[in-house]
Length: 197
Image (cartoon, rainbow, N blue to C red; front, side):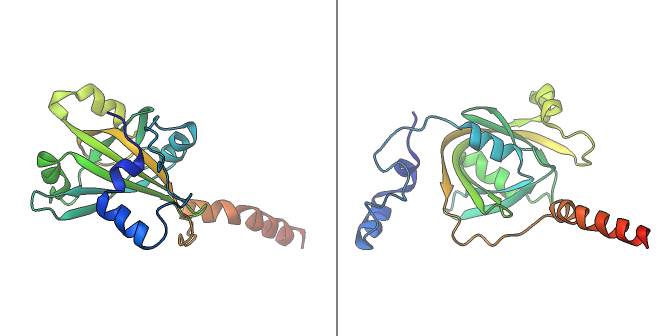
């Protein structure tokens, strides 16, 4: 069943606090009118395909949230369709906290940030874990050629809702690749000036 972001995030206690602080009728809140989620837009799909990392939140059976950074080459998180994401779960420190949590509760929240352009996307979803031996073809499809990491399983996320977050407090940061691209014209100009003398 499709829901709005607000239906999931704005529980009774959240709405009570919003009302107490005078923000319950703010136009800044998505889905307040209760519209159902239509799926990932072209804008969202493009944004996701350019990310080289995201934060994944799961919840343990004891009720504690756990947030883990997931990273890889840009595009390792794939948009399969307007309601489905997938990624190869690369081997890490082998603690398996997120995987263990997902064994008992498949609900997740993702946050993806483009620091350079001060944009942030939040996603609610449910994960299905597919082990290597259950669907090796899918793992091949999700693997990143040239990226030296062991793929342990495929993660398929059934997206329930998404929301663009306020950029107000996102501090601009740039990757090494972005800095090199910005410096390239200056370095070339410097090279030409030195060659002319």
